[in-house]
Image 1 (spheres, protein in one colour):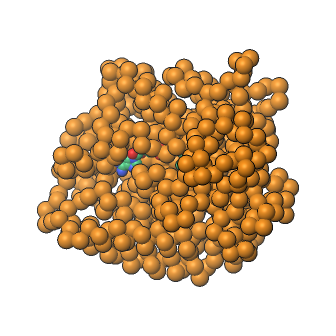
Image 2 (tube, protein in one colour):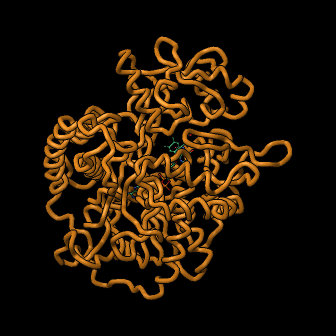
Image 3 (cartoon, protein in one colour):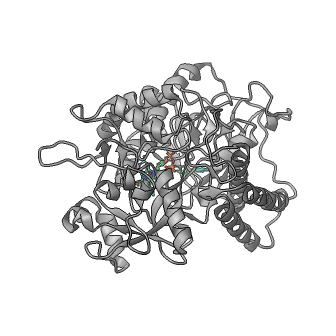
Length: 532
Ligand code: FAD
Ligand code: SIN
């Protein structure tokens, strides 16, 4: 199979790129691959909304830029921050034209929410289900384009580069090129080869590396692991954002339900076990401090009191306002017997967002030729050491556009390779014990949560690395001998991502943004990205 534009991922990043490419080149083919159903993405679960300057009377580009830089704790690329913020309104206008609806008041003005680290109310939203609305609108727009095909349940295994032609490819090989991908078709169980002229990686996040995460099961960092295996550049993986307020449900592993930060934007307050509103002790911005600060404060309160959660007191919001703005959270709490008008919600931090990822330039180009990356899998320089709330959907839109602009200028000069070998599955057989994969996955998630969580230290990081080495060795043996399954491929990718997080954390001998190491509690005067 071959296609002009190959898009890996059907979230906001992949779909918005695909729409633009299809529109600009009606004679070319755009193929979107997704390993699950088309809408099963991190995008679908986004709640709070999209941060964009849209109120000239009270807000300005300068304020949004400053908020982003402050949250990023000295590590954002200021040029990137500036163009993302300034290009944001135009990109948001486009998704509105594609059909995404954001809440408006009676006068027809957009309602604006506020979240941690924002100095103004600027977040456009669709109730508490913004991502679901965006995903719906984009998929519908895609379905109207004749030259876009979506192949669901197609698991991309690896990027095809010179390595697959028998050349030695290392980190110092100049001009590594991407010719397409190998894909495990989960319906036919066959491994196929798809050649492309331009490939866009839009594979999203990696929250599943941790025991508790707000991310769905698809978020296993596949794109980041693929690029690392292909000897491309990955950076700043130590900056894993923990969302302060995931719903605490005893015994629940995996995906935790999010209580959006916008609830605190509307006046909800965090309280510890004794009912004390503790955030004033940690930061003058209290409950609306940037996420790294709030998550660390909660972690500290939980450690001090021995509690497994803190309380989110939503009573100041008022029941009617809560029900109107957050109907899904209201309903979910109801099913658990929590009446937000009277009861407080138990919450604890959960892995939420990967600020680092595949290193790109300002046009979304990776270190591998013809391979672009955008959305959560990319590290563009926008987020620095800590992403500002609701800047992720914005970044995905702006960079999808930039990838499109650049790819449009180069595609005509790229030809297909005709000498790519088929996948070689010789010598592999069905694994005898699938349970080993499940057990290794649990071990990985446990060790990452225990040793590489919100607060880290050198001993814990070294421990994590030793355990990861063992898991890696065992999983590679399995990979060499077993018929490939999505479970095995995801485990392998997640171990790689875990390794990159720990490696970045070990290299970073300071505490900055989301990376807090008690052995180096201060910021270093050397400001650097850790490129792996
Ligand atoms: P995704 O939307 O995650 O899409 C990834 C796609 O890649 C999927 O289609 C997946 O199947 C595919 N894929 C992955 N690996 C493979 C593979 N090997 N083969 C084939 N396909 C593959 N951000 C905000 O800005 N505002 C918010 O309010 C907000 N709320 C959030 C709430 C929750 C609960 C979560 C989890 C995240 C939230 N975020 C929010 C973050 C934001 O939603 C994500 O960062 C963003 O949606 C990522 O979009 P994406 O297109 O990069 O990836
Ligand atoms: C939230 O709604 O709290 C999540 C927003 C985000 O991750 O940007």
